[in-house]
Image 1 (cartoon, rainbow, N blue to C red):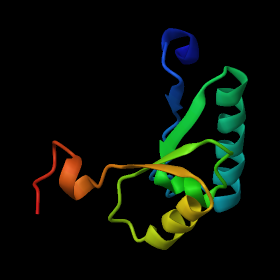
Image 2: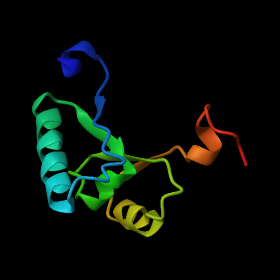
Image 3: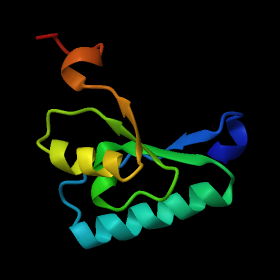
Length: 98
């Protein structure tokens, strides 16, 4: 439904702060979600934790930072994953800037 309602090429699937989900379940869910998005002709955008689940080719990771996953995100970028930089301590309107 959401893909049909949005004219743009992207669909954000979230994927951050899945603290109570096992890594295996997280990977399986993100893989499934990415395939659904692709089925409807959209490009996946997900929070940077997606890089730990194996982003599909063409996916975009949105890095909100400050979580200690910098090396994993940097490696994903070196492997071709595109990034949107949205560091929370600089770009979130509801957070005090440092």
